[in-house]
Image (cartoon, rainbow, N blue to C red; front, side, top):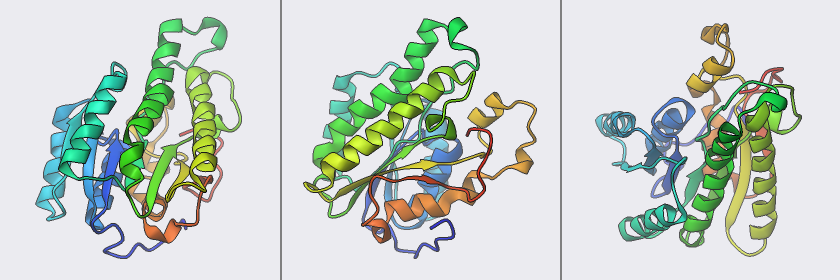
Length: 254
C-alpha cells in the first residue's frame, strides 16, 4: 500500500473533511484528495492559509472545495454540532475524515512541564478529535464506505523521554482509533485506521528538530499513497490498523 497507485477517479463523488488543511501534510492530502475527485472540506485555524489551498484546488480544475475556519484549541461541542449541521445542509453526508491537525507542545521533562501547555496539547490532539468525530458520525453513517483516519506517531507507540504531552496525546490517539474501529466494525460501513507519517518535512518537524536538514527526509507528497489508499474503496477491508507511511523505521518522531 505504500506504493499504491491511485486511479484518477478513486474518490469521485466523495466528501472528505481534512483538519489542519492549511499547511504541511493536511494541505497536500487535501489537494491529492481533490485531484482524485473528492469534494474536500478544508478545516483549519488560519483562514488565509485555507483560502490559498482553496484557490490552488480551484486553479487546478479539481472539484470545488469548502472552507471551515475553526480553532481546535478554543472550540466547543456547540461548534462541532454547527459544523455537522453545515455539512449536512451543503452535502448531505460525509465519506471521509482525516484527523491531521495537532500541536507539539514543549520538548521537556514531565517534572517541568507547564500544566497549561499540557492541557492545550490534549485539547487539540485528543479532545477536539473526539468531539469532531462524534458530531459527524451520523453523516458518516450515510456513506457507503466511510473512512476515518487518525494521525499517530512513533512516540505514541513507545514513549520517549522529553516528548511530554505530545507523546501522551498520541497514545490516546492510538486508543481512540482502536476503540472506534471495534465499536463500528459490525454496525456500520465505517472503517477506522491511523497513519504514522514518519520523518516528514513539516513545520512541526522543524520545531522538534531545528537542526535537521529538511531535504534529508520525506516530503508530504512522498507519503500520499497511503493517505489515498485508506480514503478510497480499495481499503474497505482494512480496519483498526496503525500503519507507517514510510518503509524505513525512523528513530525520531514525526
